[in-house]
Image (tube, rainbow, N blue to C red; front, side):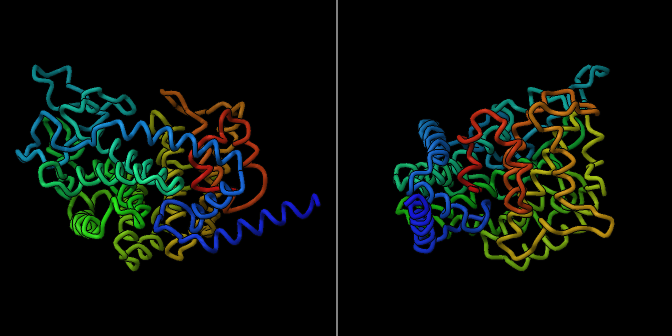
Length: 400
């Protein structure tokens, strides 16, 4: 009898996965959401904790007014409030000039002006992406149409409503005051656009997001994706060798998959083997382009997160980045294993510059993906040491 119950549970899960329509959602491993939903249906207590947290977050998102680029008080240089605008976060007023211009760089130190919603769209775009994703996931796991309606409302305000929609470009992103009106590095902030566009695929069965809305979103995304790949700022960011280049790929590949531009996605993913992994990771796993920063631990995690996101997207396009290894041993796994002891509990002391708190627990999603890609117990052993790890969202997006 003790053997029969687990086997029966596994059978039920297998049947549920087979019967469950796979949602179009590229940010999780193929089949992961259906697997998590099946495990919830047979009483998985750990996943139930993670679901309760998503529902709590979704309820908070429902109470927030949908953000819009038109809410800012300051006009972009173009004079059009519908243009996304932000100020470079690490640039500060020049103490040697009366007007503070041109702004000067202090790496790792965020100028509060760059987070002021009256003059920047960067806080709003993050809220938009986070809320659409949270509400869409809550709808998928609960079937509650209220969450689908909430996600659709946020998306319409940001992408579709003529009075509030964002123009599909980033010409005025991360401007350096006194130097330029925008630059390619600002494209990093629009990662949240790709997150929202992807998450809206979870509303395919909901009346809250009808085909006409999806069609209008696709048209917006096509224009934006073309700008991303063909504009000078986009080309600059694509050519960046550090985390900016990696996150450009994540954003461009994810949107390409949403648009069905699979050849473009596959081509970029294949290029990432040499263009990102072989360039950014040393044979011992160090990421030298991130280690030179004043927050070297944080940027090492940041770029590694981007690489694991890119590898996950690759699973949907038939490109295996998880197991790509350069001739001298450079690989995503080497980079993860290099960082593992520094994110352990207690962590090994970080030997390089880090002027901010390290937030080691942010490695948990990376370690779970490593477990799923490479097996073994080492990564899960570290996850288990963190408090409340069972309530984290990654448990639903990448269940064991």
